[in-house]
Length: 294
Image 1 (tube, rainbow, N blue to C red):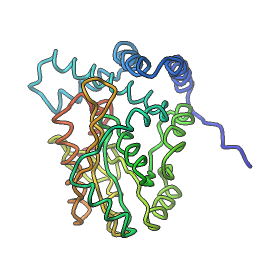
Image 2: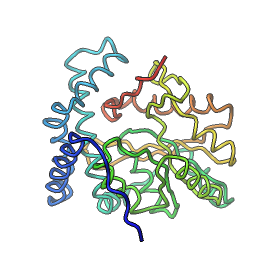
Image 3: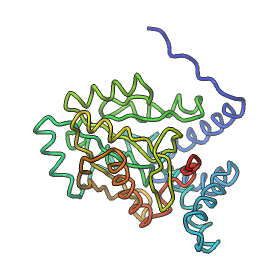
Image 4: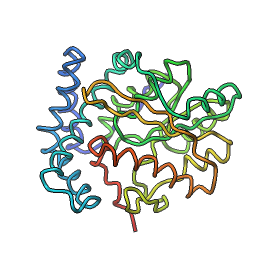
């Protein structure tokens, strides 16, 4: 078998990857209940400020919430970095993370709909954003017997992506890398009656300006386009971190009605907006989400 090509990137990318590898390796040697808050603190106190994550989060928060006091904005940005660190190490600890979620009972009006879709052999596209831990619902549904795959966007740092990608592909249904080949594989999986997850809250210059948190954010219509083509059920789901920082509330929401792609994407985005408004420190404000907006 031909080995995969070696990742390529800048010297800075390599340096960041080495630092993260060391931090992740240190955390993984700790008991689970210690490693998760450890990584949260590391991102909140050190990496977030140094890497500019906290500053970017504060900039985005100031744009969306211009009346938010500076001290509240700083606390929220710190919470964003903390959630980022926790999510990162939870996903590297996917087996233990899944075990922790085993006793979680999902809620929501979409549970009956996905059970019926499974019985009918109808494809299901779960849609969500970088909120809480977006892998928590997939873990829960996998344990309940659903074969949930996904389509993911590789990280910009190829060195880091080389060891982060297996955290998504090592368990659950088939997961495909974004691109023509991956999208075709994802579509084939759905066409056979499969289920898969799409995260739609990443900026894309080829997308449509969909209102998110009151501002236009370029959004690709892939989830709606595929759903219409395959008559797939579109179900938003979210894993909201609880106050203890370790457990989650998992909600499987009612399906999005089929309509024009732009309307479907707006409906999905409105669901995410509600979650972010309720828990602003759990969304990844570090993203340059509005960078390509007109």
